Length: 563
Image 1: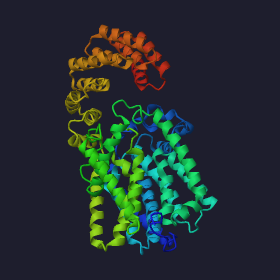
Image 2 (image 1 turned 60 degrees about the vertical axis):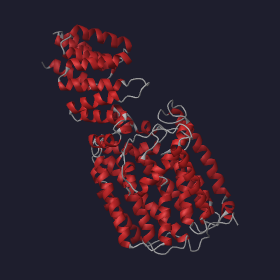
Image 3 (image 1 turned 120 degrees about the vertical axis):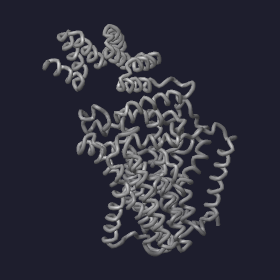
Image 4 (image 1 turned 90 degrees about the vertical axis):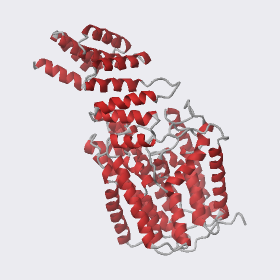
């Protein structure tokens, strides 16, 4: 009957093993994990890292409660720990990322052992291989090497721990204590990253596939009712988060829900291709939108997804692990790959949660075929080497964005990021060249990016091209004559000994924003050049009154007093 469960439990579901097994598995995973991801251990802050609490100038003045008063309190609590350990030195952040990825891999091992036994599998080899692929696959590197992607590993650690609790139960109806523990773990997962709100559907499918079919679902009505309520709360939480976000949600101007959905029909197969053949990885790929379903690749992608789901349903008796894996892979990819627009239509880290489905497919392969140990070892070695090499790309800003530009030469953002990385590294000639190229790639019809022209001006100033620097900053002022832009223009003019125009620009900057402290720092610098020390001192003191931590004002005042 169609309503029959795909398979019934054939053996005791216990995942118990000798303590030495878990100790050995954890030790091996730690050693291998820290070796494979070692090249990124000192990687810099990139992308969203710069906007996290630990990347902000005021981080040292923020108390613990300020860190956790956010939509992801548990995630920020771990960042707070890192900040207490090493400030803005990134080593401890990266080490914790690797540690969490290893721990998540161990939980994946527990889940795989439980599923393997429920499917009638024998031995430890197949679950260990599935967990090892999760640990070592190159597509996981972004989730480990990118500090902000700790949200993936930490949330998935909690979510999969809840799944392990469900699978390890021998009773048909889970106890209230076990359900409560699962709810707590799910809550911790959602408070780390919102996409784990999809897990209640996985819990329901787990009862159907592995704990007795619809009778088990009905017997566990307390679990599923609780999870439905938790899921509804989670969706409300997600909706609130999206309403506050500027990189996701229905407020994005350039990406409609329909266009995002049609594009995801293509992106699904890009994820699949990279899981099978993990080459061409790119932190910022250049991928066009599918604006309508008339796009043949979008239509073909949708047809392929429907065909795969149909095959999974038809094979649920003969290949339950594969059927379960396919369904939960699609299900867990959906929160970031459906109709809710996200500024980036593709990101490697988004397969971290759905990777559980891939691990189930690996188990099915071992259940159906005899795969030589040498072949398995070779594949794992290739994955480990690929992840090691990919981790090296994340070791520096210039390496990361050079790699991205190589794959997306016509895209504005990676070119701009590469230019800025060169500037931060003191490579001003390379920075100026890349800024010039980036300016030609700005999206047509969009508001010009003043950050590009400000940074370009600073790079030209670094090169000693004062006239070029002033010209670029004035281009920025034509777009937005804000206090920071006008103050920067004044600073550059002063370097050209155009002191009166500099003071005029500073007057305009103060009118735009009287609270911008650097206006007074730059005015103080001009007064020093004009040999007006008392007036310079007053300006530095005004800057410090506005911002007591302004290091430029502190240093300038100390230099003035010590001259």
